[in-house]
Length: 472
Image (cartoon, rainbow, N blue to C red; front, side, top):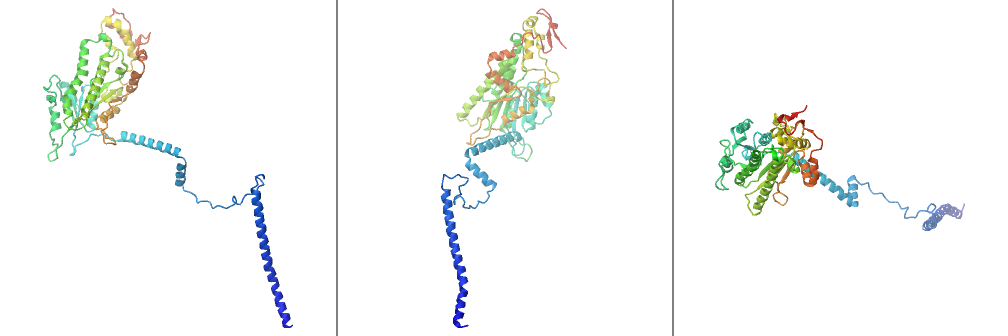
């Protein structure tokens, strides 16, 4: 084989390779053109609105693949939702804030310990004077509770018997205070002779134990507690002596005691409180056959209101030494417990035994019928279930405690009127807002009610006292 033949065969060996290469290029070019044409046709058909959506091919933009975002956390999702819903966000925040404030206030009010403040050396320094009869269970209950809370308690006494009752309590910090209202100081600013012992505690340093730094006491409050027992019955049957005794012991005495203690309450620049405690159900309703109680309690309320406004005027005029508040505690039915429950109770309706036969005939049936309609009874706690005694004790302590300051640094005022005990607020609302004619109809005796409170009228106007007999 010659050299030309060899060259020819070598050249032919390259022909399949070139054919494969050129054919692949031609095939790729055809594929690209076909794909471009198909894409163009697809995009053209996708933009035609007359084609049904079922057979219309999707456009290239809709077929673009998007990388999904990374999953968000729960906190981010909640934050995005709150940003997108501002109205719901504000409502939720208001609900949570109000609920939290109410819960916090309730826990703060009921969970805090009500204890009297002590001096720097640990001794007791707050003095409370209770102007009430030691014979009354409510007086002894209040005194015992205040002594347990760290106060030095003084109870006014008028006889050796009352002083013996105070001493029988066997409490170190409950003392008897002899207060003679028949003697008055020569000038209003002079200290009453009976109050020199308390005046010395307020003005002179006290040394509880040798070697301990001295301290001075302060008068935190004066509690005026007239006897809650009033004469009942028609006005014509109440003798003048009962009216005079009621006015003197339950109205005039609290006024005079307040006048005597005012100089002591302003000795030091400390907050103090004058508290008036009196029953409020009969006075709120102006109940019939309770004229003495209604007259006295309403007079005390008017005196307390006038005194409160007078002290506020003095405070506004720049008298910095006068930080005295006046608080009225209107009492309803309160259960003091078996410890302070009287051994014998007065049965409502027995007042008629002291009336004359003419008065029994004239007023007896109406009065006995009204006893059953009255919202208040003196039959004891077995028939009337009152609020627990701690509600009264809490209210008294909160009234004696120094007021807190507001956000602007001003001294908050205490509530001037506080309703304590079951029925006090309800009957107060009824007496203030319900028409008087409707209240009178509610309290009026029902016709045909001849028996009430277990008594039966079996006699006539000319009968003797035996005409009232106990039934069953």
